[in-house]
Amino acid sequence: MSDSKSVLVLVGSLRAASVNRALAEALAANAPAGVAVSVYDGLGDLPFYNEDVDVAPGDGELPAAVTKFREAVGAADAVLIVTPEYNGTIPAVLKNAIDWGSRPYGAGALAGTPTGVIGSAIGRFGGKWAKDDTRRSLGVAGAKVVEELSVELPAEVTTGTPVADVPGVIDLLRGAVEELVAAEVVAA
Image 1 (cartoon, one colour):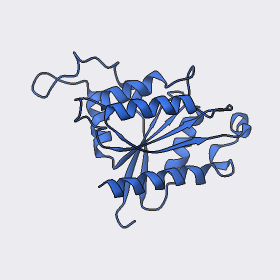
Image 2 (tube, one colour):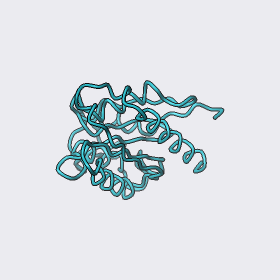
Image 3 (cartoon, rainbow, N blue to C red):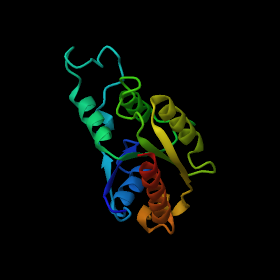
């Protein structure tokens, strides 16, 4: 990879001690060569999507959190979503972000953006349902979903073992980012 690529990571959990946040931060600290990975920290600041608030340029002012989010997504070469599973589906904060990123329809910040989804949860399905729902929502939003990965985390993660110290997890995360960036290059 001759040019550096940027990947913006959106975490579907607002909890500071979230395993998914730990995965995202471990990835940012251990990104593949030539890839800048940054974790977006403002999803909790986004208001619930409301088309009355989502005004066209010149018709009013968007909330600052929305402008910041759309600019961050628009500036990234690719987006990676790391999501837990809440009650068998996508967390509301992540669905809300996808809604804001999808507008204006067909030209939103997510439109055509190579996007990967990692569904991670402790349990036998590893976040599969949340990952599937996230992929579906991203597809309708116009994103180019190019990678999916379900990371099955061993029990050590819940007993205080740092995610980066769990054997194989960093390699799985790097592999997902490498595939995401490779797909972005092919799509360009």
